[in-house]
Picture 1 (tube, rainbow over the protein chains, first blue to last red):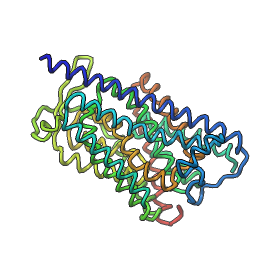
Picture 2 (cartoon, rainbow over the protein chains, first blue to last red; picture 1 turned 120 degrees about the horizontal axis):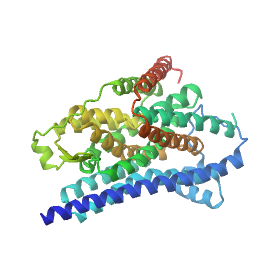
Picture 3 (spheres, rainbow over the protein chains, first blue to last red; picture 1 turned 90 degrees about the vertical axis):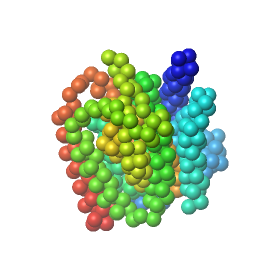
Picture 4 (cartoon, helix red, strand yellow; picture 1 turned 45 degrees about the horizontal axis):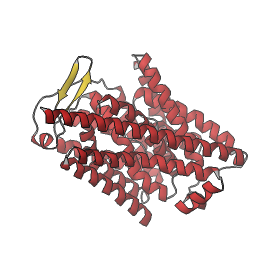
Length: 131
Length: 278
């Protein structure tokens, strides 16, 4: 009975942590996107844009070094892209914290399942880079 | 078109897409891609990238609330995420080799399927049959109601898992949450109560979309100038939608109107795909 109660407590605990991470991740990343958007509009509001042909993204937002340099030099699109990267990372961070939660609950089956999901996302990241 | 004007048009359009997607339960992604491609002439690859970003924002935002209420079955979601992330990775990787007009046609077909599903009557079913696999994987759970916690069991784990692989591929290929397919797997095949199916599906959508977004991010599909108004618009629209949902109980006519609009957009996508005009 006591064991059951501690388990229950930890399950709801994990729910609270996961809920908090998701909320904070969306709030912070979308705020960064918004700030970047304001700068982008201020600097390039009258620039002509055309998205009718796929040509990828500008060089300075296509790699981490370019994005970091862009943030330092206050380039709107680099700041937006940093926010988007953080947004994409939010559900992944949620999975990491789920894994920690399952370890704390001593639920090794689900620790393994969660690790597997993380590995798949990692594989996807690497294969996207190679392709 | 200038950056300011295009941003404002997309912001308003995305807000409406998010609002309608949230009110009908279809999600914003299914409206935003036809809006960008058909009405604004945006290349479908950029549209897919921007939609994917908005999908992560809305699903994470609403999942936060559901998880805290304890309706979401976290173990079930975690287990099925194995299938959806594998599917999403495969979908994003093969997307490069599939002609864009075929992707447009497939999008149209999935869109019509989602619209039909959103009109279906939702019967709440709670089962107590035992499944050995579900027991071993600790998938059975309970959800809170005003009358107390209601326990339920999960059936046909293998069938549901297979359907989730497919849902993941579609999500990765088209840049949508494919919530309709996820609910079909949980509600239709695994016989999970509808409330648990929808919230757990929503919980999984963010991780699924992230698994393909890491591929698209590196391939230049996710353009900041385009994704910014799409993500902000859809997220705000979805937030407004969830506020309205609390106050009104009948959204039957809205579902019909939305289904008609979506079917029209879908046929446009299919037509443009067939004529190679996308």
